[in-house]
Length: 380
Ligand code: AN7
Image 1 (cartoon, rainbow, N blue to C red):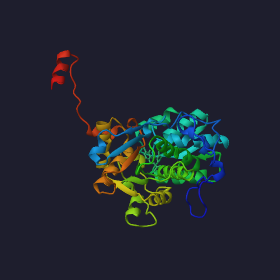
Image 2: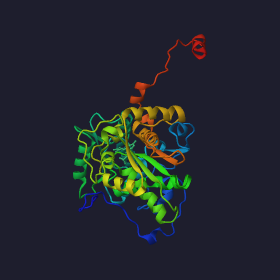
Image 3: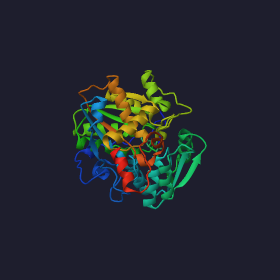
């Protein structure tokens, strides 16, 4: 059972307050937070996920117009995205339940991550992806890990719908989309890492697709506050791609419900999602935090993908650049003030999805393999 029979939202794991009294953090990465995770770490299916770098921005902060910007690089997880945080906990849970196989619908990264953890656990993985909309690197990862890859004629939302139906009422084939609460538990550890390394910024910016990650981030932050590790909470900036922004639209129009987008479009295929499963939880998180939802165009996404690499040395996939593009928009609109402290999460590695970037960058010169020819190039 993954969904509340009353409201239809994904279920959330809640801890008894007494259980969280003597919480200690030891070790590195996601399992450092084992005391606030709902599975035993003894049999953890792990690839050493989490513990990703938090880089101080050296240039973009100034261009964007905030005094202090930090970039949390989730692309340095084992399979190259934040999904690994949730998958280590989720697949560990699958094994606890005795599942023989695991399944997900995916725009790519969930598939790449699930395949790897399932391989490590020695169980079968089925990944159901929208035909023609998944970046090559992610498909290659799933193939390499031996996943059974199913391509659906239709977008991600259709894929998730049939996968959800298949997995209802059984743990034989265990569902590991972010509607699974164990995924959220793993992913919340990003909040713990940010707080331990940085403290509490004024804002955390994060890309939003199916809306599991922003839900997890907020859950982690609230737990930290309720346990007394922090005494205030940051505002959340959730960023969607313009052509796939049902949560932003509802937020901007002051509506309580989203209107799903039938045919979502964006260059950022990872967040090409029209009917996000966790939209209600995301909306609640953003509102509770006093934050904002934003949308950014494909042009802005590609521009900031390039700038992240050329100004900061950080190569991310397009969906990840959405958080920085969103921050730039928010400062331009004076929603984020100059003197505020910001952490932006970039969610996936650029190596997974280099295609769109190859269309915009230049500066490649072919020469004969001769010293003089090389010298001419260097001298300009
Ligand atoms: C790089 O892999 O939904 O809002 O099936 O790959 O938690 O969905 C990926 C999502 C952001 C959005 N950045 O996170 C999938 C999938 C990257 C992503 C998101 C995704 P959610």
